[in-house]
Length: 239
Image: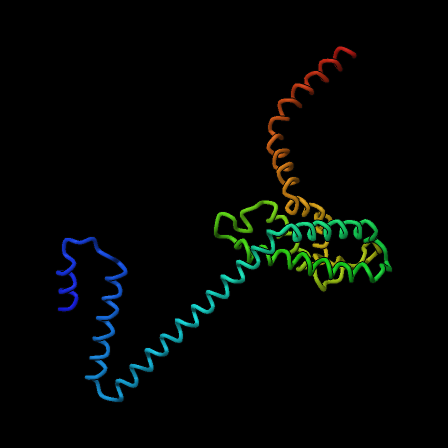
């Protein structure tokens, strides 16, 4: 305590230096800790030193985990901001759309290649979602993944595909006396038709166009009202 008082008296009237004060406090704390350890018996001192080492090891482990998470966040953010990532995602969506056009869901003997391709596309979509969540954050933050409405659509599409994974579609009904199969998770496969909409979140220009179109919908209400009035007037006049 006398050391700190001497330091404060020597620095009276001068502009305080936070770094100097912190260093002085660390020196004082270290000297008093060493003095306290000398006064304790050997057993108590060894136990206290072990606790200190354990605390330091725990802090080092926490710092290592935080550094790893920050590194993963920066790496994923760098990947999703590259042009190659956007182009690759768009190409995957287009190829998947073409595959869905060729596939007939009512076919009783579908080609196995469609199921294999579906598994590949699901892995790619899941990887895209995970990279965006790790790079942007999930919920918290201004640029979080779920703060974008188009990302919410992507999230629902991927989750519905994962939920239907491994579940066989229900058999066709219509025969007399056949029991109702009820709800099946495979029915969520119908959400796959929304996958072409993922291009909206991949292409920035298309996203701006869709936002502008949706924002203009309220203004179209007045136009449709006037147009309906003209149709009503000429229909009455023609009758």
